Image 1: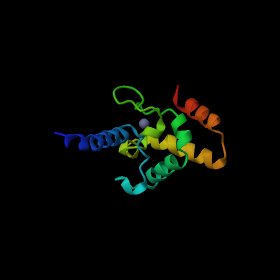
Image 2 (image 1 turned 90 degrees about the vertical axis):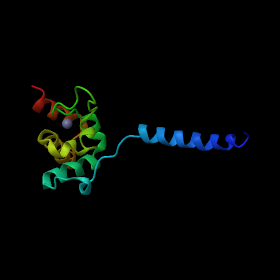
Image 3 (image 1 turned 60 degrees about the vertical axis):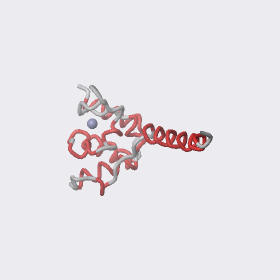
Length: 119
Ligand SMILES: [Zn+2]
């Protein structure tokens, strides 16, 4: 009967580990995880990796931010293959990437997206 106690720490570690895996944020996919190897799609994912903070501040206007399993930001579109099949997500990603490369501030980029899509 005493032997059972030996397993308690092991079980606790396993539970903690699986909780960690469930709750940790998903990473942005990289190009070799994609099925759609169109240059603009790859570029969009590269920008999402490079400018995570800006993507996290940006809304996605493709409709993915409402309903069940709604995305929290444009960044979420690039944590799965959602983004590779969504021309809207890709277009937004390319705008952010190009503006960031030019040195445009996050605030202005968010404004540019809002003006373009929320009307
Ligand atoms: Zn989206």
